[in-house]
Length: 178
Length: 428
Image (cartoon, rainbow over all chains, first blue to last red; front, side, top):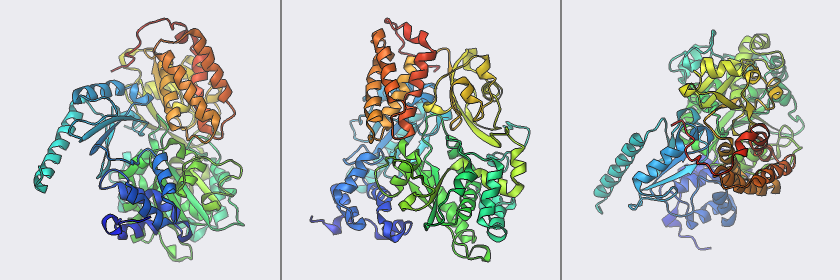
């Protein structure tokens, strides 16, 4: 398969640091951290990333794609820039998480699992995040990583979203295509 | 809050400020136990001390920790230690607090375990959502390396150890130890057929000890103070302290470190401040979403929360993730929640779990929305019964616990299935 290496190279220092964590004859163990590295900037793993990771690890792109498909934190297509992932499992639901989720989606004018019209915010229900005593809570997944927001109210969540929108607008302005 | 009349064993960061700082931890005897084992004890002696302490696995199974360590296969090398930090059971949030607040005691436990089973490499497998926490653990590990507590020739001996973090990516099943090992090897997180068990056939087919975070965090103080000291806490068969993660319909949810054998009543009413609105407690799940539903009568409330006593009220202690259910909650709504969780998290490898959770979720959805016929409840019970005992791993078995016990013990909730709006269950 032809791969445009110059355009899609993963940062080699970080690749080497990841590979150093595992025995030299067990490079396959690095597939998950390498997928996180590939996903970091654009929030999804592209075909070119699959090919490059496969080449580094001596796997086929299909084998790498199977990992993307199995684990829920990897995405294989472009997403909203920010994912608000609300835990609605039993302990959180007992503390009002379902209502929080419904009200948040209603205020944003979207269905659960969908993205706002500006392409910025996706709100989705996820499984337990080990923060049951601080519900309602969500994690914010973005190119910058994952952050927990606990003991949330509709107001605190909307304030965060407003902040994210402002940040995105500032960034667009700075990059000169806003 | 001082939830006990004694110093903490595990949640020491609640008493000592900046306990996640290496210097502070060392000023409080940190890494003395690790130094002692490496410089003064044979690995087998360390295993014997842990055996004598009676420490049992805190991840849910309650298997004796020292015994597990003694099973390591000394004819096959190298050995590995893997800390299970995949904490994903709905209702469980104790390992996260340990790793955030008291990370060095946990890492010292990993190091002592590695020495005891003659491993030179250990991995901490964290659920992917603990991304920020993993970054902090990496900094703590780097601080240990800089201080000569990890690396080659530790304390002037020939012993070498490195610890690495590894992030999962969102799969409850990876808390099952053989699925975790598959995932760490870069494969789909699906359980292996057992036996062989990890102490003989683990990571990269090599002998491996997999222990829960809380289990390992107990080890440094057991070495420091001795097994007799540890046995002064808890009961004879369940010695020591346990972190109870309390959640659900309760005024003060949170982690409570108590001696094994405290009662549900003490946890829920004394420490947890009782039920909001003065409502009655209806049911208790002792082991998170994997738990059967305990009818919360006086006998149950006065039951000791230890490994031997909880089965007397028809449940398991498991990871001690106590979810409190009050009288405002309908059991059909509850089992619909747990079944949806297990359906989502089924890894798909074995048919009873993959298909069974799928069919159960169709039925619980209908039942929870009051669109079911009474026969649907019987069918649900029948499907659950057919899953029992037929799954490759415990996840499939767990998926039916709340369903079967809910139908058996809270029949009345299923008998008023004729249309009635139950849309807003919540305590707000």
